[in-house]
Image 1: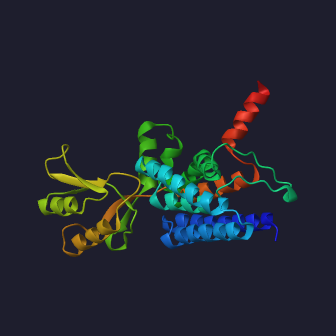
Image 2 (image 1 turned 90 degrees about the horizontal axis):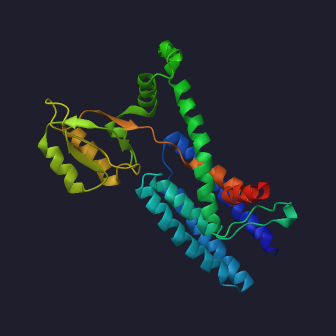
Image 3 (image 1 turned 90 degrees about the vertical axis):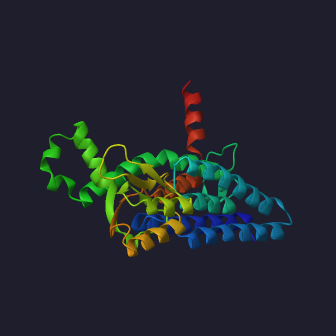
Length: 289
């Protein structure tokens, strides 16, 4: 059995999982745990098979080390609000399947390799391609919500600061039923006076945080999500319980989170075919100089 064919099978499965993750992220704003965990298990098992088949421990060892390092770094970036928890698990799954650089001579594919693990190339590529993806996603939301049809004046005042602020707020936020809210949702400011809500949220100690309202005398407090990670599972159930008991209203404002999984998919495919974009840029700069 040719090892290159096994590598090609691993990459094909990884791309298929990333396609599914992108679809889930766009449609449901979440990358399911079963999907990322399945990819992680596949990566570990397939590289264990490679180690046993080739009598070389480097495959499974590299898979484990790459997964741990990738998870640690992407988790820290999650703490800095760069992406969601599902994206961290997806990167980790990719690193478990493909810990090495790719070089397929029999397919005439010679991607630019980097000095760091392959998963880092995917991370960097994903960040670079996320900017055009973000613009496309924002324009998609604008036309989906018929913002310009409802407010024709914005077409003539598009560069006005207040108009741009309205476009961003109306496009990237939406009202949802509390009973339908899901884990990872990024909750906007919700104003209230009931101090019992403060105790309930503080006791959970999750992503929601209570603040004193300094701008209005009518509402004393408000709570909102602290980071892009969104609410935890416990906070999701807490909001639903508080809604059932009448502490909060039936609807709550949440941010429309940017689906980063499509950027990961594009970053992966670029890494497979062309390699590390940073290395490519660096190489071209030196060639020009």
